[in-house]
Image (tube, rainbow, N blue to C red; front, side, top):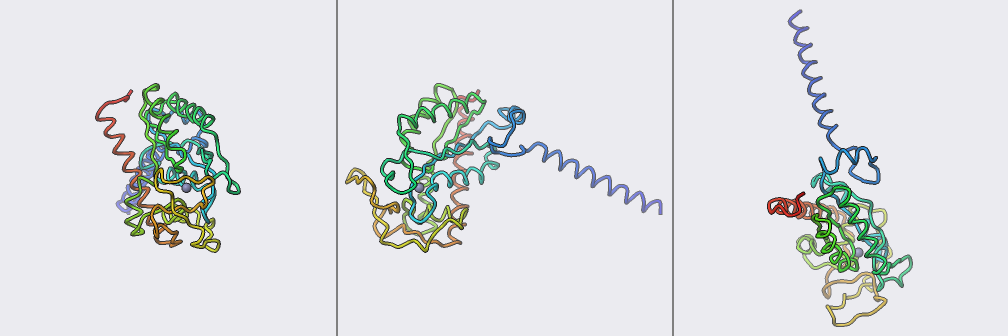
Length: 279
Ligand SMILES: [Zn+2]
């Protein structure tokens, strides 16, 4: 009897120490990865001692065929949430507005002038550096922002001596688009529609879709209509139409996120090896 009691006692002890270790491990994780939800005290404990990377989702408010006008910011925001733990990063509040003069004519669109956009983003980036982040990764969802963002990271990275990267996910994921859909993509085409369908299936409207509304994105420098005649712009003739396929959507979402996470981890690793702006 005594032996049995000792056994039970020991099992309980082991369980308690196991649970304790588990709780301690959990205690090391931040209560949230979103800067919006952190209090300043916890932020101070985390950055830079435990977390040196921040993800900043940026996008635009503009038409996207039959998917949300906010797709360009909702997609990188979902991406940030999906990969933040894997890349040990915090997530800065999303920048929902961008530079989109060619689509401003569509209902619900808002376009910011580059001369207002650039200094605003510059201050956000500088402040993130001031807050102790070493790696500032912009997850961009909108092509109209790219040139302004790239110019900014060249300036701010060197001025603040931090590492910065702009990730244009739809371009980076080109290979995955061709792998999953067996063809090229488009603005609000198969690729963006699938990515959004994986996260917000309730806001996808195939019942409003017809192939007529699709047009070919003008090949570089060949012609330039403003407003663009269609918000679904395929990159190649006859390819890139939305598929609205749930299974493809889930697969695409996961593969794109894996690729972006891998790029960020590898880039930070190589920055570390080179020792550039490491302190
Ligand atoms: Zn888009």
